[in-house]
Image 1 (tube, rainbow, N blue to C red):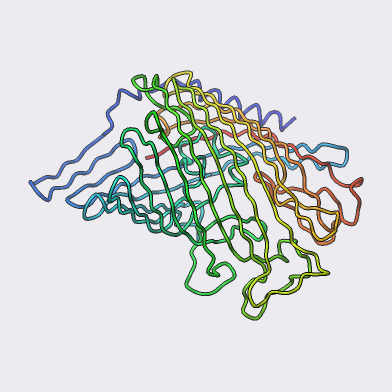
Image 2: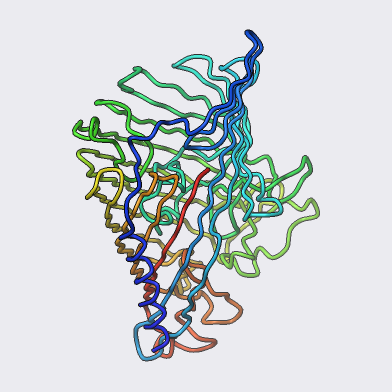
Length: 477
């Protein structure tokens, strides 16, 4: 009963806030306040705009923007089958994100910079972005430092411009996160970008011993470790916007004077990533790869190819975003530590795929919209030698969602309510329960299908369903 009352209270709060009177938006000027200090050349200009504080003088500009997301989450877990676990439910307030970005240019407008500090990360995750960009030409620009990797559309889109309060389940399995390295980008066509491209080389920092993609936001030093092993990542993304530039977002916030124009974009990205990993910790090779040689270099390496294709359509407040993901990982013994795997459990390959579909519509232009989400993940299991047991690094899942946004001042002040139903297929453990650990899903820590020493018949349920309700207030200043 208490769960129902909590959920009802949350929904009533959301509906009440969504029904609040609208505030003026499009009619307000971009600059809310301006302070001019000018004595001819060498003067300064400070202005308060809808997105932060901007300070400009000769050869220098600094913009300061802060984004905060305060969220209430209710989650109800329902496992199928008589042996399924149930009741790991919660209701929780949290500050999901609090970030401050410093950006602008130095000496001249071609020399651009950005530093983003994520206050909720702490420790090594405090510095989220730190890069310098030479915007030399329309066709060729160079960025050096740490930034979000330009691989898939949904991850490139700012967390402040999402339709739901967070990105999709499938995106959280495939995205390449942040990366340190060099990026060259440009576009052909000014008002109509017939081709936009990003190509770069980056650190290949393994996200986890059982998660074969890049995650390079942490601080690292110039010293050897099993995560800094001369491994690299190459990335290429191409986009075409044949009817005009389409903003990276998940809805259509154009005003009355623009939203009747049809826009669409198509993207394609390829990523190659190689790194060493601890096969024993991942549970892939069992005791055959236990420990590391005296050098400390991991005995096992992986090569992963990841490809995504996406399409995006905007018209009259209607938006459609679709994406397909494919990833293939091969494993190798390597270097002077190579050994004959005959008679031992060999390492196979892994192929994952998934797709996302997001549709949103503005009932009131730039003010009130609704959206739906559907995405599916299909993962392949590891196979060890001739063992019949398999074990998936990520559970197969289907996600369905409904979202409502009330935008008081666009993305700068908005309230979002979304409801998700996520059905996950639980993974088999490779050793019938002797020492294997539970897997981490995107939204929860998953139980296993086989209990210690038991059989599939005595295991927990095959599927784990989650009902998630989230109410989020976002403000950007």
